[in-house]
Structure formats: structure tokens, C-alpha cells
Length: 60
Image (cartoon, rainbow, N blue to C red; front, side, top):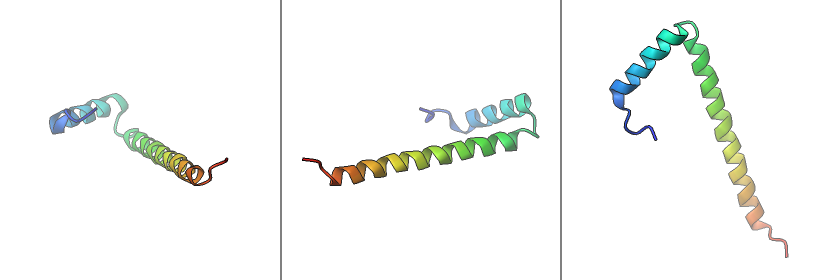
């Protein structure tokens, strides 16, 4: 999805974010995005683990 951005595009996105949100808000936004990604990963691991457990117990 984002494989064609490259370093110049990433720098441009960061500069625009710095202008729009300001330097004081960027750490808060980064922390919120990081915690959201962490929660999403944990949720998907939980779903995959539930599927693995249910495959072992087949109801006949």
C-alpha cells in the first residue's frame, strides 16, 4: 500500500504534519498511534489463538 512513498515522500509527510499540528502535539499523536497499533496487534493475536484452539476441539 505505502511501498512507493520512499524517503522524500516520508519527509514531506512529516513536514506537513509538523506544520498542521505543531511540535507540541506530534509526540502525543505518535504515542496514540503507537498504542492503537499495539492494541490492534494484540487483538489479532487473540483472534488467531482462538481459531487455533477451536480447530483442535471439533464437535461431532
